[in-house]
Length: 142
Image (cartoon, rainbow, N blue to C red; front, side, top):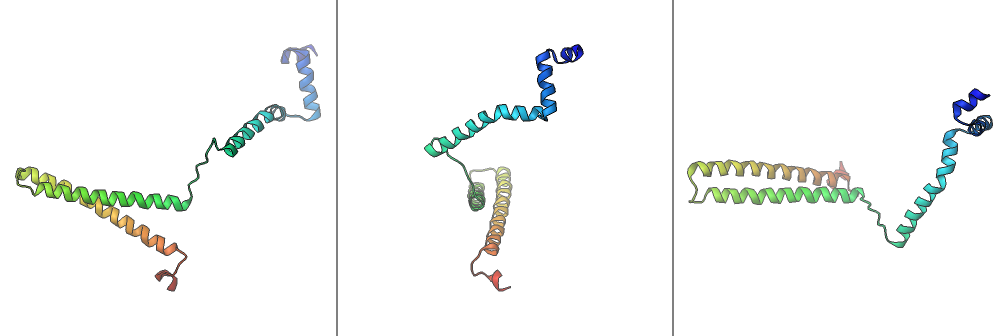
């Protein structure tokens, strides 16, 4: 008996642990019993803030995600096209040395390639959107 008290530190603690073991309470259950009111209060406070309008939920649907992806591709396409045209116009100007003009033309070609890739991705997205739309499309007749 004294060894059990020494193991747990006190006789009261040993008795409580022995009672919990005999009744079938696990330490996890007791901890849940103690912390549950605090967790419920936290959820209640969050719900109250939502109801009062102090807290806003951010929800992004699949449709919004697709629209954002389409806008990003369109921006990339237009930006690369404008940049390529501007660089080509600069390279054809009479104020640049021939070597510098060639370097700018190579950079313009690279940016034009990015524009082309963005256009292909945008076209692919459009075809995919038409394919999965619930309206009359050419894909409905196949």
